[in-house]
Amino acid sequence: MSKIQRIILYLLVLITGAAWIGISADTMTTTGKTSAPQAGFAAPDFTLRTSVGEEYKLSKLKGNAVLVNLWATWCPPCRAEMPAIEKMYQEYKDQGLVVLAINMTYQDDPASIPPFIEEYGLNFPVLLDETGAVGAAYQLRSLPSSYFINRTGVIQEVVIGGPMSEALLRTRIEQILK
Amino acid sequence: MLTLFRNLFSPPRHMILLLLATWIGLTLAEKRTERYGVSKEDLNNITYYGLIAFVIGGRLSFVLQNLPAFIKSPLGIFSINPDIFDPPGGLAAAIIAAVIYGQRRGLQLWNTLDSVTPFFAVLSIGIGLSHLAAGTAFGMETDVVWGIDLWNATRHPTQIYEIAASLLIFGLVWLQKQNPHPGVLFLTYAALTAVTQLIIQAFRGDSTLILNGLRQGQIIAWVALAVIFILLEHQMGDGNEG
Image (cartoon, rainbow over all chains, first blue to last red):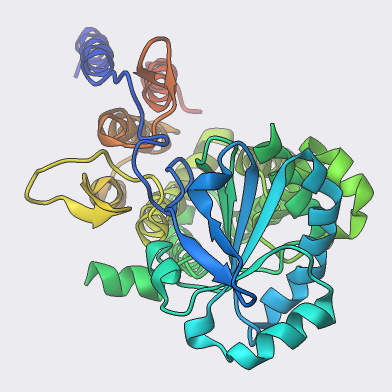
């Protein structure tokens, strides 16, 4: 292939590429349009109760930054990150942070939850997923799983696995509080 | 099959796919490296230094970008959580480490890039597989018969497009018998990857939109392609022996 032929080929590819960019331009993204447990989507809604019967509905918390943490008492990294979550909750709750720690009760021992809350001195609501409905809606595959939801109800970050350090929690929380 | 794969390699286990691709890619690159005048030892060293710099640089870059958080909790720098990572920062550190090593050893830039190309090509397949496992880099909603169910909708299987294209590019790279000019193998790989991104980004459901709806990923791929063509023509020029 001669130099001229090569240059013509390059130009053809670039012109076709530019046309393709124009054709495939989009005026909207999926952000917040549908619900799914992934960054960029609206957080799947749920209604759950604490062990004392207090009810929480995620969609009613719009306007707040929400950290949804899925956990179980038997899960070592879940236990390891609880003190950091409690510390961050105390530090940021006045700025509008809500923490919803959802225990995967359908695969946990319900009797072990109150002593766990007492042992770690948790002040945020611990909700019970007794049927596994929230675990299914969030397509749970690993514990802990944490979803950082911004004030408009859109998941901004997902952290699968743990334990999360204070610094990581702080960076993610400050992003959703903006 | 897809569900089984996604369950098996769901995050954080999707990292295994990247490690596997790194190992296979390096093994294959090693088999061909002497063809490009780069010793196996140099190839291994430049790759390992690059990878170490990628890991450390990615972590440091994240820390520097979020310095106030880490000043309050400095031990977080050493957390085992892989989310404390900035990929562009890691990439920049890897390039710097590779350039320093290459200069100290007197390696030819284009020959070295050609020798590492099979590694990059296999790593691209691994990245596609990890996207599929994690459900990231997902497609737009569609009603095409080959759509996959992901994130509560039927979507273009953009991760599978990515894997198929990467396999094809790897095949082309691996079957290349002659490399008449230094750098042509690497630049061909880079051009094909940019074209792939230009095409596949159009079907992505998570594109960042700029300038009234243009997809940022496509713009970057197009600019990269133009630069690659200029470099390719330079390397293909008469009498250029690197």
